[in-house]
Image (cartoon, rainbow, N blue to C red; front, side):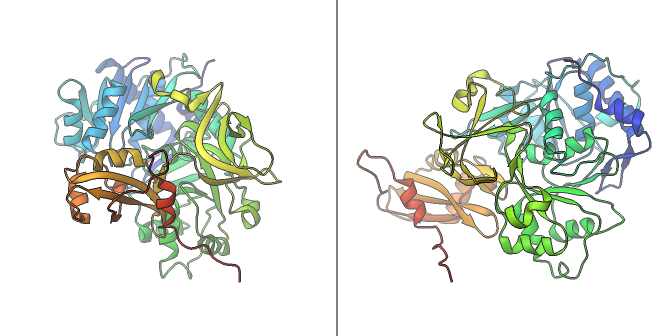
Length: 509
């Protein structure tokens, strides 16, 4: 099925409407300007680097509006953008490069050395922005003839490969098609109050994540709205921006720790919120007391549920239902089907089952078919999460079928961390799991047995993990045992270990 060129369409419809804003530099681009720049980027990519349909271009860079320009240029060429998570270690990034086999690596100045290491002289590289190199993508684009849409883009074209991690820690690239992006917009339009021109997203989550890129920014751009980008989250600065009526922000997507940190600011209580009409919450649950603080400001926080492979949106709480259903993950979106499954069968009403989802937002599969494994089954994606539904059809997350936990909104897979720690010369056995944490949502616990019988310090663990794991994956709580508890089959009982660290349940008053 033919796909329309978002940028050309919006440039014709809203030529003088703001489309992209770089909060840090003050640069602003209107839709007519975006169309020209995307055409120039496409011209450089096609004519200088021979990027064509089916090719992949990797990107390692801080949040920047150029990411969207590059994405749209590649979509115009029927090629694919592969955003890389700069929080990962070099070996982790290398594994993603080896899998995706990009024809070009684009980078900013900060990540220049990493890009060179990833390219290893075998892949072409180009920087954007103010860089020391004589040529940058922007310099080349300035002199390039804009390449217009060839009107042959297909909805089945893979626009993005977004990497997630499996329980083995091996990189898996979810293929996101043009159709997936369009249906994501349709799915969330009503719940997230997307209206097109006039909508303006404050974008602070990393744009290499599905949550940062596709939860709100791409849908709002698809609709003709505007995305304002900043590199990093700072509680005080972000709060000032979001509450400034002159900025005109209407939407944002955040993880719980961001809302918690802003609510703790001394100026929070006395500052009115401006025109913000939607806060999308992903990556975990928010403390009820904090949610009430935002509700009192007239800004309901709307919890959403999803993942890299699912659009990302699966379900969301409508604004008018936050007061009564805000502790749920909301209603499944109109074009997404949800099943709760145990042993291959749908569970009875009210029972807990693994969440299976299907619909046009679901990723076409992982980049390498053999990596898909059992995640996809007869048209359904198995999330690995356990959930239940109430009598009104609202979804609740109960636990994770897999051991994955989220720290600061980032996925951490214990098997990957355990494998890295097992390389320590003095660690004989090790178990890693997540527990609730007031600051980060969840944090990692490592329980281990040493060969010497001596305990390891946090400094020992951090030094060992440096270069092996991203920092957010390194556990913060350590305990040495003489032996790990096991069941009759010899398997370590991780559930029992985790229970020791969980807070005692609150008793009713």
